[in-house]
Image (cartoon, rainbow, N blue to C red; front, top):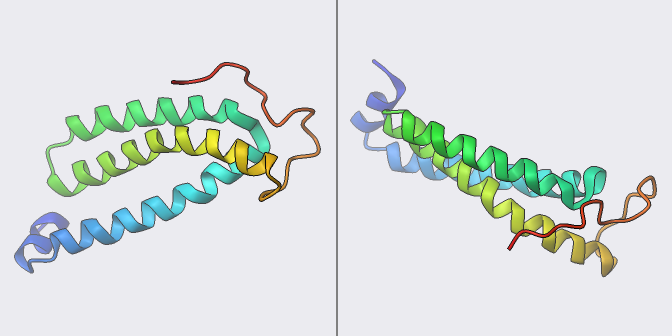
Length: 113
């Protein structure tokens, strides 16, 4: 018996997806902060690539549990593009430390959106 069938049998598939979504979103918060600290706004391109890749995987996977979780990772990655830009502003306001090893907090001068 696979995990999806087991969760469905016990009527907790939705709860499991919800809990995993909570953990995935919680994981992306420090990823945005660390990504911006070390790479500046250039890391948003990584989030874009990850979002597209995970979206393709979510469509390709037939299992509802794994497809849902891949979709959550995909859209969390895409949302992180916005968060990286906002993280830039939070650093400028002094709410988060700037990386002293980078000359500018904005390593990529192009802008999405």
